[in-house]
Length: 169
Image 1 (tube, rainbow, N blue to C red):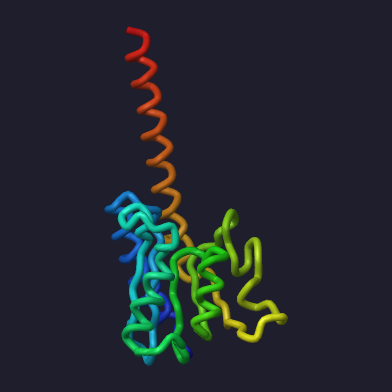
Image 2 (tube, rainbow, N blue to C red):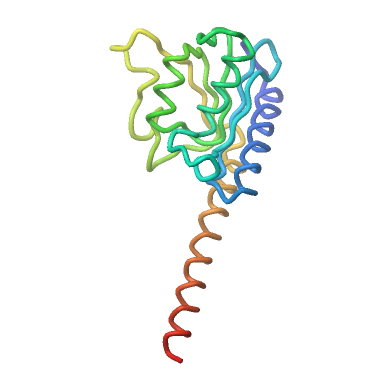
């Protein structure tokens, strides 16, 4: 489970490809892959809007796929790579799946459950702790999110301006 920087960047690029799948569907672009023995066994991207399920975050989708791949709820000897620091729900799922290692790209100052707001995966009161590493391709991971939200704000502003113009006629 020790990966070189080159390998970490490769797997994070795979997670970014998953994030792009969300982007195409106008979902918040977060992507995730789970790796065991150097092979991707689970992939996921945000699909809440598409599936109308609040819990369909990238990590949950990848955990479900990896569980099916290994035919076990425990994802021992795996590393989860995700573009953005997991939220509290996903952090809990990572711990419950017994994933021993997490690598994330950018921090999540508003919802982060790993280092930013909470430290669920390293809390000594819990029986399972996760080895953490952040900052892998952080700029690329942050940029896809920033671009998404910038575009969303611009679209809302344009719609509002159009409504204001039509109401003046």
